[in-house]
Image (cartoon, rainbow over all chains, first blue to last red; front, side, top):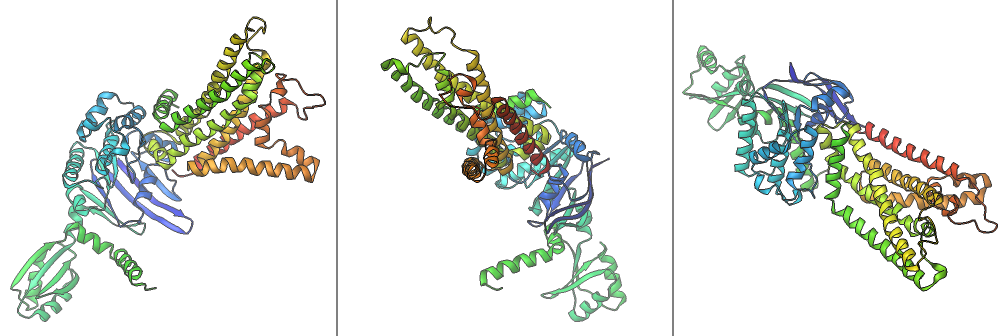
Length: 314
Length: 268
């Protein structure tokens, strides 16, 4: 059974198409990263998954259930936060969790254990409005964990956390995955996603441009650095290689991005063309580089907007 | 609907809310000041004796009407803040249905309304009871509460819930306490102006204006309608009280139903 399944999920606000025919699945036990630049539709998509935003078109299945009543029933087995931590500012951390615990049917001992787990037990009587951003995030995570949910949805959980806090959250997420829980993690911290997630979907302008396991995504993005006596000859030959996605020059090297993960074949092919390399080094792209590659247009236009605003260019 | 759980959560949220207690204390202080001065005046001038059961008309039909303004304002603060803080959305994510969330907020409508109404009765009635004892008329005045006083209180509660239900509709629709409170008072100001204009244009429009929400709720607070205070010579009740009661209840249903439909339809 798919834990999350969407088909042609679309949300339109007037003339703005926030989410455009998104189709993806999340399987049991996956730690699924949901990546994309700001404003690309991540939160709207999560809102539709949870049934608090009505889709313009398409279908959502959460834990196999769909429709208004189905999603309500599914939410009983889901722990989720959306955007910023949303709590009553005048209530203490403990009272805020009591409200959630009452809704989820869990007792005081569970609240206590969960607060201990996120390191807030000693500050349980402090008002939420007095918490630091990191503490607010921890409380939000504690609230999602109450009631032992099957699926945990976290929207930017590392926001405002210090490196130690981020490490703790990372361990918590990895721990949830190890216990067979499914985690759906929306984040812009790519190195965190790379270290915690098993699968990712990359969203761009409301559409999914890539969905794969992290391993596959990075595997297909293999880049090989080549050096040789005749650099131009090397570049020309590399361009002819059938599995070459792109060929660029950098200093005294030729960088070849491959469609496959087989640098040996490239070497054999070059030798067959009578071009010999003095240096060949495969370089795996980081998730960040893969992400930038897939969302390059957005980043370029964002940069253009900033530059235009800064220099008054229309 | 998990009524018990929803009620427990609403009580927890409300009793920890400073705005609720500040408004309650200000209201109680104001009521004490007004009814206290009526009590002391009654001691000095026997013709203005503040004694039960005759004082109920002065309590409910007089300054007590302030309860009908405090309750809607507090209700707006309690309801609209759920949207400002996005806790409405989080409550639904945490397992409530949209209908349950609405139901939880709806509980506040009679809860807050009756809280302020009872506070007003307690303070006003308390001073009037003290006046009755001080004047030594406890035995001669007979009953402390007559059926006509109960009828006045019943009508006034409908009026108060009418104002509160309109405030509830604004809180759900506007989702911002400042704007909703502003809209609440602005509406009644506009209604009053339009009512006067309508009366000047034609008698039929004037009669219709007397069934506008504020006019109806206000009429339900008039002691004269229930015989608590006798009609003055030549004074006539143009519209029978049962019509106002029917209209008042209809407005409450209309406002709550509209709020429900808007809430159900909108994304959180």
